[in-house]
Image (cartoon, rainbow, N blue to C red):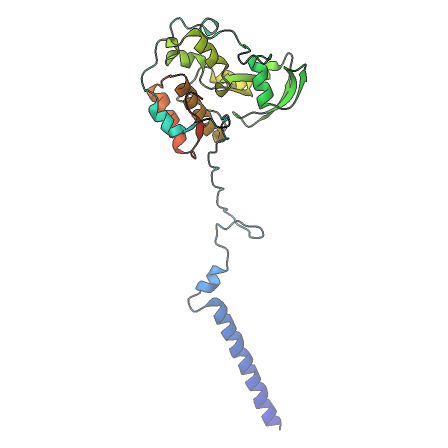
Length: 265
């Protein structure tokens, strides 16, 4: 009986070892592929997995805010519209006069009782307060050029928020606006399509730069920025300089399809 018990015990141990070995092999696989697949690779970066060299986050894609288009108005693809703009050198800036050529800032072009600056502040700021129906006293600007949040307070620091011409008036003057009537130039200078409330110091650094020399620091806004420039130039029959055209095209090539108001709308 003792001999038989010993044999049975030995047999049980042998079976246990065999089963354990089979289980280990089944987890690992003969080539180790299954085992390897369940281990994190050196570049995995997920909660609970340590990594000495995590994969860098992919760059954020360029995006575009929906353009302001009146209900029922015709739109055009900004890329296709760019292809319709004449490409030629800039005319001389000789004789350019901001007020004399485009009128004083800011006029009530839509006759709503509010000047253009207050109209744009009312459009682009949030949580604004007013004096009467027009004058914006305070508000918050989520600046599209830099991504900063700016508290606007009317008074000595009003210039912290400025109204930028996406197509600078000096650039417009050198790319066809000289041939427009004064009334049309005045409309261009006050057209909401060409205007946006932005960080003042950034706007001053832009100065009269076109897309070849200046783009918003916040890359995600560049699609909207150059698309609106194309829409403005098409609307007022302006042209683009060669370097300006190429810069706009490079930006749009990295953007989703952007539809902007078609000329005449």
